[in-house]
Image 1: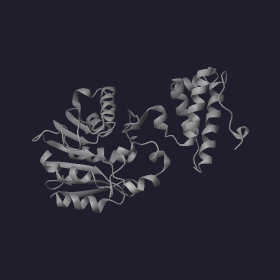
Image 2: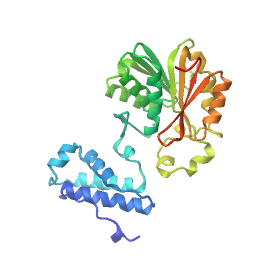
Image 3: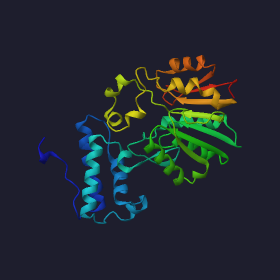
Image 4: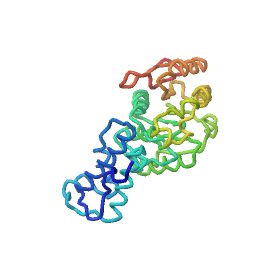
Length: 301
């Protein structure tokens, strides 16, 4: 491809309106080259707001504001990366989940809307009084922090095997004013959770992709999400086994284990819950795919 075929870069002195138009062209050019049928208009807008530290109101009020040389370089670089497949959240450093903004880094997955079903399930099974939540593989902390945002008297512990992820979760807790009710701990599943420590609900979005499948994933996932948070081992169940087998000893008698699953894992994860003596309830996402499996020590609420 000739350089002349590439969309024009954002230049110093371009107005915001011109910069936005160029960014959209750059992103769309990259998407088309990857055969992605998508318009980059919204991404261009969000990247411009992030790169220039503007609000939506600023964008509307100052379309003729001139872009500086450093801003032009930043905006062009972000647009090219987005067109090449870098996820938007990896460029802005944050993503929305449960209508809350969460910091993300290379140490964490980007929170996804499907995981909100875990939060919905947890909220439907805990009261508004003193409640304890454990999140295994907390990542950004989006699951427990979303729950705490809805339950002012609840407290949560987030565990992860990644120091970097725990730092992000702590930062997100401070961002949302929840640090006094949220703690983190470096732990491989329940390894560092104290014996006799009981929770009303355990939530988890564990790595559940089979190792052999990862290379065939969409590049935005394969090349940018941490492998540690994706790779579920040979059969995708490596983390589910200890997570489920040992859940009962950390749950109150009426407690629930709520896990996100892959679209084809309802039977296999359900079998692990049955082996552990847990009853199950299966929830489907908006697309009709199995998405969340709930294990309960007693009859479901």
